[in-house]
Image 1: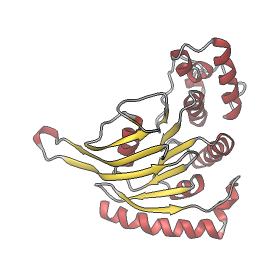
Image 2: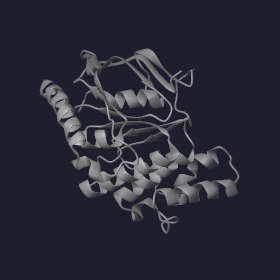
Image 3: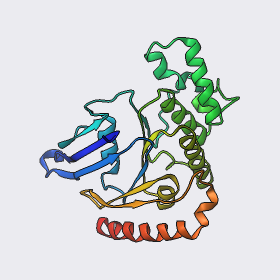
Length: 258
């Protein structure tokens, strides 16, 4: 059984002010196995974020269903950790308090909360910033905190919706390496939405390419690059070949969307 099964999920939004409905997502099926790292790549407006929100339980499919470990997903849950593009930290809480938020909700003993928070503070490179508030942090540091908060709950699957999209190029590259190194050590199951082709290849074991709206899975491309994966792989012939293949796939869909 797949860890996560997306079965013929579609989404149609009602029209605004009596206008026609908008079909954002055609029936889509994806099987995600344990320890998989899948990136979903597609042009703007293709429904990739809608699909992720449905998996997170933040939206309801028009048809089909999502199952995690055989159980139907109908609402948000601690078994799915979500990281958004925007910085969604609680501004009145420190780094450690943000990381421990879900743990407090579970009424976990404070000593255990402190152990878990310290572990992930180290993992994301925020030692020395434990008592800083979000307004005192850079964008990259805020996203490190958000990732640590999601991981601290020990979710079955980590869902990331263009988490590095608001960062500058250099910070984005460093955050890619950070997240990949965490995945290589902890082997969480990951579903990662992006519109960046290089990011999709560098992060994933499999890239799913979505069509222009209404979105569907147009292609699945395996990424046979080994681990640990060093940033210099981006200049390899194998990486360049994958980039050329996916660039052509996405260009066709971007032209349709335009």
